[in-house]
Image 1 (cartoon, helix red, strand yellow):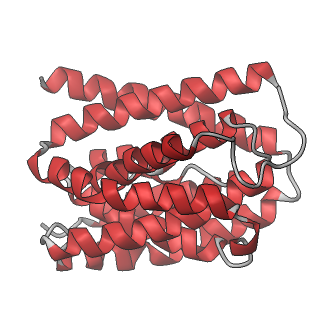
Image 2 (image 1 turned 30 degrees about the horizontal axis):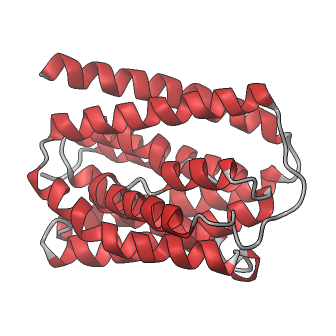
Image 3 (image 1 turned 180 degrees about the horizontal axis):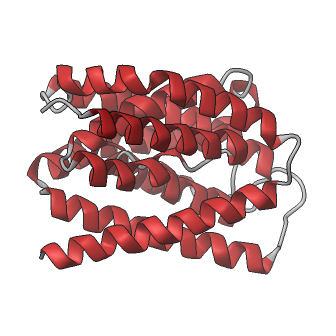
Length: 257
């Protein structure tokens, strides 16, 4: 089903705002865009569209960050993600729209709660643990598996990785580099796998083409604004959007059951 003019405008606005948040704060595209795209599109094509556009945003923001990403954690997280990709793909193929909505809503609410708690604590660990916490090699692989499964199932690799790396005491710069580089590879693999099983067809690519320009503009503007405006302002806005979209998406999913 071709999107109407209203749908096209809404998709453009959603992807612009999500890319703006991602460019300004380093996270937020999928967790802002996906629940709103599910609402507008009304089917699981929204997952494939989110994967395509999330990859685009990652590729815009990643150049120059590869050297900042800590090799050890990044490698182990990526290894785990590779193991998790097929698990998430199987879950996606068996899932219904209402199940995906419920899962997305709960993930967003949990992530928003963590953001709120972390802001209240205002605890900042100085320095960077380049190789990650000692003795947690398998923990990083396990987190990677969960992230990989969430990539192909929900187009959301970020929450488990950000929760883990932030809790590990790694500094902000390497956390941002590690997550964005991981996103670029994760979304690339998810795109290949979902295309291979026929989950991403020509219609999704056509819709994605219409959203490319607002996504690029949002990412670039957000990246430039990040150095001029207080990050706390963006994080407050993102947190508010997460709470609203997470609660609304969960509410719709519960009503449908």
